[in-house]
Length: 210
Image 1 (cartoon, rainbow, N blue to C red):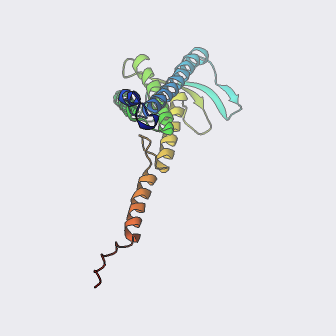
Image 2: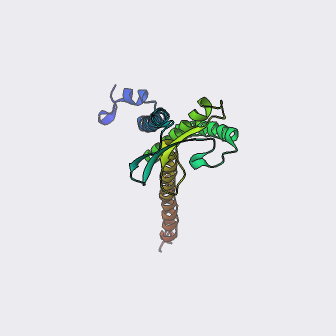
Image 3: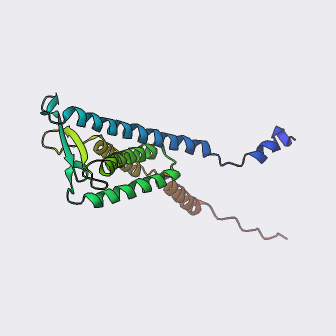
C-alpha cells in the first residue's frame, strides 16, 4: 500500500530499529577488532620474549635507545606497585568488566579505539597474572622493552598509555562516550537564550477606530 507522494506505509511499519543501530554495530566491531588485534600482539610478543630472551644477554634493537631486556614484573605498568600483585589483579578484572559494559554505549569512533586499546592492555597484563608463575592472581607480567632511564615495559603498557591519550583527546574535544558533543549542546542552549532575548515583543492588538 502506498501513501501520498509515493511513501510506502509498509516500510514505515517494518522499520522498528533505531536509525543509528548499524552505526553502533560498526563502532562495536571497531572496538572489538582493536582490542583483539592489540591483545594478540601483546600475548604473542610475550611468548616470543620468554622463548628467545630467557637466559640471554640484552639485545640492542636501536643501539642503546631500544633494548630487549627480559624481566618478570609482579606489579603494575612500568613496575609500580610490586607489593600489591593480588590487589592489582582484582582491579584489572574489574576494569575489564567495566570497559565491556561501557562499550555497549559506544557512539564515537575515537572512544571505540580508546576503549579497545584500554581493554587490550588491561587484559594482556591480566592474562599474565592469571596464567604465569607463581600462580593465579599472583603471576608476574612479562616485560621486555627497555628505553634509557625508563622502566622496562611491554605492548600492553603501551596500549594502556595510548588509550589514556585517546580518551583525554576525546574529553578535550567535548565528545562523550555516546557520540554527543558537549559544545553542541552548550551552543544550542546559548542560541536558545540569545533568541529569546533578541526576539521582538509581539505587537499588541490595535484599538478599533471610530
